[in-house]
Length: 179
Ligand code: PRP
Image (tube, rainbow, N blue to C red):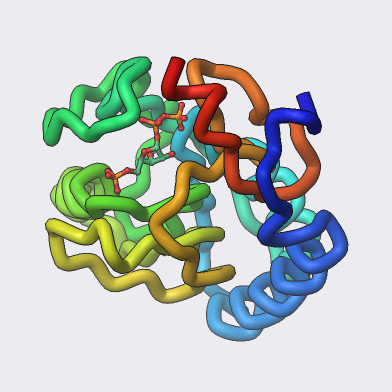
């Protein structure tokens, strides 16, 4: 698996350090507020798991599953809800937790969808941002790192559902996906 990686962009340690900072910011910003973290399956799982442990205030968590890409490497522009929230979010402060914002289509849709449920606020925490790919304007309040437009895998990011379990974020070798 590691042999398929061209270059490591962010090590486990670098990711951990950045997440600690973000966790502290969130803990301060949401002090005394009813916070719910909403993870977007499946890519956000490692980020969600690490981030929530660095949040020092009381919060709850929920998950949504949406489909945008399928197994393709290009966005279809279509967002479909596969799993909705388990909990009501009315009057709660919602923080959407994502691994990557690419075109921005998924997060733009999700923010609008969740905002319609009358929460106290809806913000976004995202580990990676690919600004070059942006199509929909989106405001990420808590961002881990900006990344160049390469095929990235690891730490939740997949190629055909594989590589999510790598503990770092790396660039996938071209010969793996251009066969
Ligand atoms: C990825 C990622 C975001 C979305 C970002 O999910 O986790 O949800 O694509 O792309 P966008 O900004 O162009 O909308 P994907 O659909 O690959 O599902 P996954 O989380 O299960 O990997």
